[in-house]
Structures are given as structure tokens and as C-alpha cells.
Image: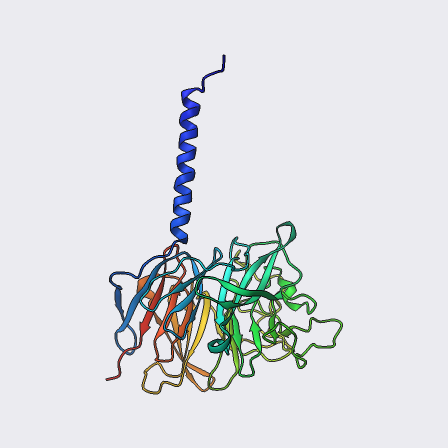
Length: 397
């Protein structure tokens, strides 16, 4: 005669089944499309130039990482877990787009930056940076190009892969920017393998310069050398999570995390060494000096263009230029994760003349920042319930 299941086992099985259903429902809810908020929330915050209006355009984004402004007034937003979403101008959030590359989502890894190609109006091509899984639990920064559709990507192709792939969950970078000639720059981290930044045969800790199809420009500084990777533009970087092109001059600017202190801005030039970990303004998280460091300066290595002795935790970067009627004209904006603020640097040419920290009273980690043609600033907060914010400059007079 068959044995009857014991009540306790039935109860445990029922609980497990219900828990699985709850998890599935929660995951489906996370991935589902969401309508525009019924009422967008306003947050007036203070600034040195007057009150600044901050509006929640969209909410419910799970640890969003990168945002791109679409010509129709909408947005593309990446979520680190590997989702790419459309956000309409009124804040409706789409279901995840199909055919996004597989990502390695651990620690700081996942789906990272998103940018539009310079010819997006005709090509609909976008570029994504992400942590790409490798063998035996390894991973590395990668970039793929794709054609954007309404609900899916097509023609998805990986055009860059960081080599060698390494174990560890942190320091992937990564931002993408185009220069005036249409060359593609990819910022990366050193994957917490410090001396990899000084090794020209490894791609960790390097700013890479490519053609839009992933091929190497003939005038890259290390083309033809057997002891260096031809993709490398500059080296000696730690973890670059900020990258932008100055519209006034065409120069590339980047910012990177120091260790404990020493976040810095650089204007990277071909073939130059920016010092990590041999020179740094930071110390180890243990409180001890960086073991490899020889000080804050060394001949043959570039000192930071601008440095913070106390790290704000720099992330996305965007220039605010060409808007002479705005009090924020000729500014550089940077997200700050640790400081929970939007940093505004006033510029006189390339010279940084003043710093202001905005949004600090809201208490959100700022992950990315972009500037629209009409002078509004769009910001992503790095939270489980992440937000896309619109920040409007104070009105003159």
C-alpha cells in the first residue's frame, strides 16, 4: 500500500511553491512595462544661483546605469541587471527590449553605458558597454553595436572585448564617447589588478580608441608595436566611469575613481601614462599607502588635471555649453555616487574655476547625467527604485 505524504512535507512543498510563484511574480513585475506616472513629482532644491526645479520623469528603474536622449524626446535607459528600456517623454517605461547582449551581473558588472551613433537619425545604431562573461567565472568590459527597433535590437555585434578576461566583480568602467571625427572611445577599469594599468599588452586600465566598426585607427599611438595593444589610446587609469567630448574644442575628458581619495579628471592624450598605481592622491581602503605608489608625481607620468582629495565617487559626465542665456552655460556636470550629489564645475575655457554641488539634500546616488539641446539636465539615480530626473537651471533675473 503506498505511503501517504506526511502533512509537514506537504506544507513545506506548498510554501516552496508559493515562494517560487512570488519570486516569479516579482521578477515579472520588475521586467514589465509601466505607464507614465500620474503626477510627476517636483523637488525644488537650492543652488548658488537660485532655486532649481527637479522633476521625477520616471521611477521604478532597478539600478539604472546609463541614459541616452532620443530625438523624439524619449530616452534609452540601461539597468545593470541586463535590461535596456525605452522611456517616453512623459515617463512611461517599456518592457525590456529583446536581443540585448548577455551580461555578467555581479558586483559592479552588468549592462553599463548606452550612446547613440553620430548618424543615429539615419542608421538607428546604438552602442552598449557591458561586463561580458568569460570562461571559469571570468569577465571583461565589452562594447556592442546594434540597430534600435521599437521592442528589440537587431544586427547586434560585439565590436570590442577587453583582454585578458579576469576574475573579480569590480572596476569595469565603462563609458563610451565619440570625437568630432567619429572615433569611438571606451573607458575601462583595471579590474582591481593594479599593475595591469601599466601593462601595454593588457587592456585593463586603458582608454581605448576605435573606429565605429571596431577596427583600429591607423594613427593610434601603439599601432605596429609588438609590445603594446594597438587599441590603446592612453594608460595608467584606475576605474573610469566618466567620459565626454567638449563640444567647444572636441577634446576628450575623462574622470576616474581614486581609491580612498584621489578621484581625478584628465584630458587624455595619445600614448600618455596617467600614473595609476605608481602615482596617486589616494590611499588604500585599509588606511595604508598604496603599496606601488611612489608619491603624487613622477617624471614621465601625467599628474591629474583636477583632483579631489576626498572622493565624491565620480560617475557620468556631460558638458553644458552653447546656451549663453543659461546661468549654467560653460559648465561640466558629473554624477557623484558616494557624495550623493550632482557636481557642477564652472569652466573658463578648459580651466575649472568653481565647483557647486546640487541635489545633495535629496540623498540619492547620482549615476549618470546628460544635457539636452534646450538646456535641461537629465540625471539617473542609482537605487533599487531608481529615477530619471529632469533638472532645470535657475531662471536669470
